[in-house]
Length: 302
Image (cartoon, rainbow, N blue to C red):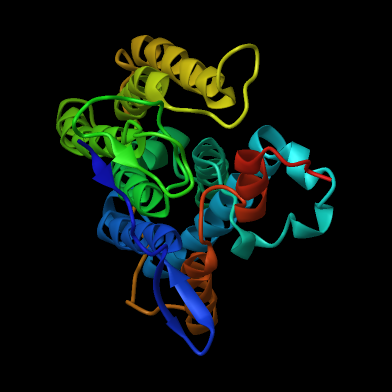
């Protein structure tokens, strides 16, 4: 016996406008990130205004890279003939490895702009990242976009329009991400932000454990005989292991002087940030709905 997943992907609909559980996970995650950066602004040496502007950089690049990665790596057979849909996030289609790439790029931009050591920004953010990805996988489970392999285990789940009971791989990965949070918090007590150890542990544990978990994932496409995401999982794990050995011997840089913070938040930037945080509510699924429907029916992409 297993569990039949029959959640409505939409949280609610008002005047024809639907708010989706999957997109809500993004909005919740971004809001958590902003609050986390606000709480850690003294450690980073940032003013309140800098937190708002850096958060804008993160939200824009995370969404952009998550979308581009999905289009190019996972769903190009669809978007090759539907290029007009590439900017239409409301049709679905985001990739977690793209989100990570966007986060890394945003951290680099923030480092250059604020003159804060890159490793310090990354070390501070990995705790938030693990939590966000944990919540995001719950959104994946509700929308049924991440499909596991067939299983006879009693905790198998039956997804709409998918044959057989499947491993709830999104919940496996979500639990892994949430369990990383206390590990990373403890690592920051052992190796202060700026040393790079917490970032290395995140990369190694996220990539390595996800590689094992994704053995139970039914990828919709393959690259070199395995799911495309598996190559990135392996690369992350190896990079994390190497980075850990290089970073643990480093002495973290001194904390920058905290700029004078009068508590003011730039209103225009704050409103733009709020709008961008709410934008993901329109994203219904991690895969483009039409693409998946045709994929499962065996129809042509043309």
